[in-house]
Image (tube, rainbow, N blue to C red; front, side, top):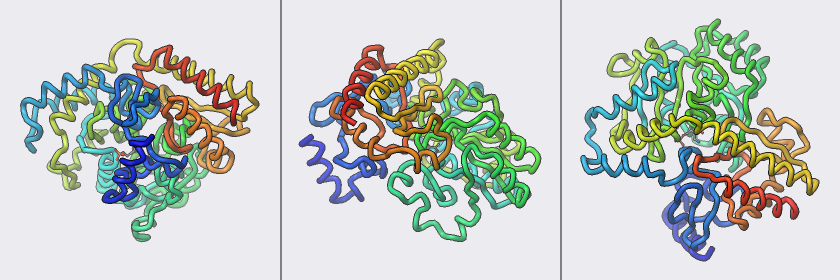
Length: 427
Ligand code: PMP
């Protein structure tokens, strides 16, 4: 790891913590972050020449695996025509048409450069549309780092122990009501008190930023009904789950129609893309049609759109999601067997090709408290480093989900299970 260490030392001179996004710094698991050189298919290669089977996939976008030829070709071809114009291009319409076709709840869509911009803008629009200020979110869910959403948040905020960040004015945070994921009673109670002041509920329909926690169907259904009764906008933050847990996202899988949807990760094919969209009546409040302002110098960037469009086409290949799901199931069954064999208390969650690993006596992990209070984070850290030594790269935090790609082969899965078996024996 000599090269990674020296690059990390150099990085810390001018980059806070040596990273451009906190969870990359290995603060949760300890040790030095690995600096990557290149990636192909299911494998990432570090600057010291080590190969790892990758289950981070750039935190979600790489559903086809790294450097997928159809994505690279599309970007290469498009690149020759110019990198950015700040003016409309036909490829943006193609992309909008494709996403709206695949996610029927979206009548209209606006592209952004990140998931954070998508959720931030969706909330502004929901507030502008309803004329209300309050927002409901769920503890341990992460919706990017906009002020109103960085309250009891998940992901890196949770890993670093600052779920509610300093720098978020109390006068902003006071409009965010945080409730427990999968606890419909708490939402009912809240709506009974202030339902007519709540602009939006924003929820990760499968929570993927406090590890991986699927919803109960009745939870999502209940949110839908409460929003209908109270005129509140239901926003599904599908930045992670969109085109990941199923073709049309978690909303297709659970058959619940939100009013608005946020997307990111997979839809950018690995380039910086986010998007938000939904019902026409809401989206028509957005500038320049309506008064709610939102914009972006590089939004709808032609390179990003070409990568995204190539991705949208590639994922429609028949059988892709079945293969992904089967691979994750096989891997998790192997992990469970290895844990049982070595007397390690362990369980896992899966939603499509997202998964969560938990070192716990619990049979079911279903909310933030379960993860924070009932799971052995230290044991996860030892597992993480053990797997790394065995050439398997998992998310460097017990609060993050893992991702399978279509490039993971039977051999990769078998190698991963064999590695887990060796590491479980040492826990
Ligand atoms: N929403 C969810 C559900 C996410 O998982 C993330 C990122 N992990 C975001 C929003 C923010 O996206 P970005 O990092 O692209 O700003």
